[in-house]
Image 1: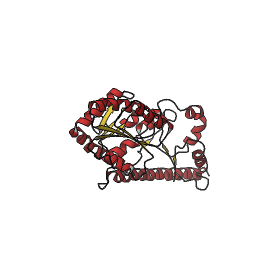
Image 2: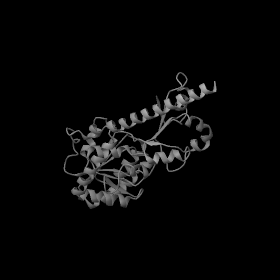
Image 3: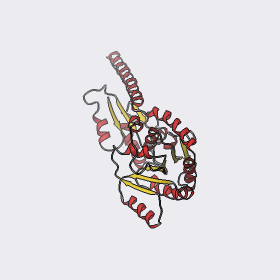
Image 4: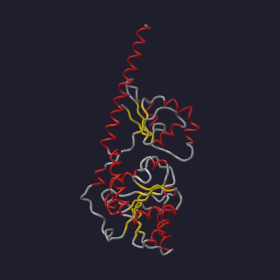
Length: 303
C-alpha cells in the first residue's frame, strides 16, 4: 500500500507513483487531493495529458472535502472518496485547559487564528470589529498567528488609528494554542476563498467555541449556517459585524451552536477518520487482488 498526498504534484509524488510497483506489481496506490482554488490550476490545465498517465496509476482517490473533489474532478473526472482531514478533538476539548492570563477578565473575546495573508480576510475582520466594539465596548479581538510583514502592517495601522480592544499575538506554541481557544467566546474566520476544508473551524468546534465564518465552499462543508455556526457573505465587514454582534449579545445562541458543533466535530475525530481510511484500504486491496487474479486467469487461457 502506497499513499501519496497531492499525487500529481511534481516531483516527489510522481516519482513515488513511477516506482511504486517496481518490486511488487500488487502494490495498491492511493492518492489524497487537498487543494481547491476559486480559479483554475495551470499545472492541471497545461499538463493534463502527461499527468493522466500518473492519474491512472491510482487505484484509489481521496479528497478531503466535496469542494476539493469538484476542483480536481474538473481536470481528472472519476470517483473520489471524500474522507476529511482528522483532528485530535481531545487536545482542544481537555477540561483541564486554563484560559491564557489576561484573557479571563470578563470581556467577550473574539478569536482569529491564521496568517495575515489577504485571502484569510483579516482586513475585513478588523473593519468589522471596529463596528462590533463601538456597539459593545466590552469586546476584544485576539489575533493569533505567525509574525509577518503583513501582520506588522495591520498592527501599525490599528495603532495609528487609535483602535482599542485588539490584541496581536505572534508565534503561539502548540501547547498554548488550545488555551487561546479556551479563552475565546467566539471564533471568527473571514477567509475569502482557497479553503478546501477549514481546519481552524474544526479546532474551534472541538474547543466548544461558536463560529462565525465566510460562506465559502470549504467552510460550508464543515459548518451549516445557523446550526454549528453563522456563515456570512465573504468580503462583507458589515455582515461579519452583525453576525459577531448576535453572538456577543446572546449566550443562548452561543450555547446552541456549541452543542451542535460538538456533535458535528466528532465525525472528524481521528479514530473515525482512521477507520474510514483503513476500510477504504481494505476495499482497494480486495479490488486489486481480484483484478490480478482475473489478469492471471486470462493469461493462462491465452497460453
